[in-house]
Image (cartoon, rainbow, N blue to C red; front, side):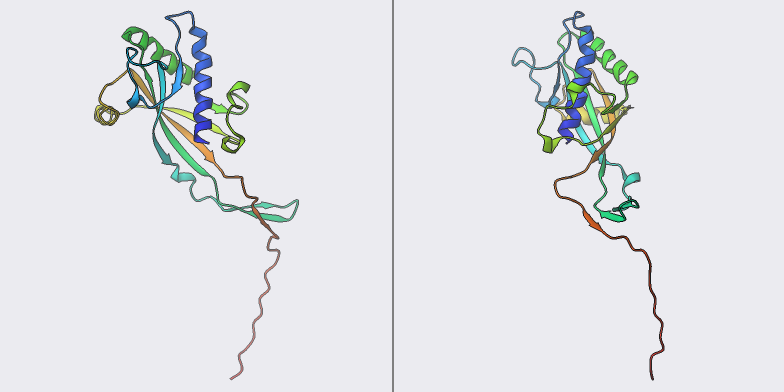
Length: 203
């Protein structure tokens, strides 16, 4: 499901960057670990890399009820609440020419400023159907927030990723609604009344 969300982001960003295909040779978006990137002299690959660098739980939505009441059917469905996650995405531009890389970075930032919410209604149809059904998101809402790390955080980040820094931008993507639908949920009758009986215990 995480892969599905990232593929949606990749295809949406690629469709936008393709509008500039005749400018500076265009850009190719890939899901890849930038730590494993090899220079163009060694291997072929994309020049806009999307790397998942962290996942955090959205704690403000953690205490949701584990049941849904259906008053029409008079049923109560019990299931664990979905997991709401915040993903931290690193988008790196690894074009050899630095000025072209900066142009690509500007286009990425401009795109997510223009379109910072992705839902099933707002993404392209081609962005949805490309992975096995079991791994697809049933419903989703991905909200992009620009993340501004400190110089110390940037140093730690790129030190962890291998030390070679490229033009980049960080986004916090919230909230990824993860829900496993393989097994049917438990349905029971709702509680309609509570009966209490009081009596005196014989001595």
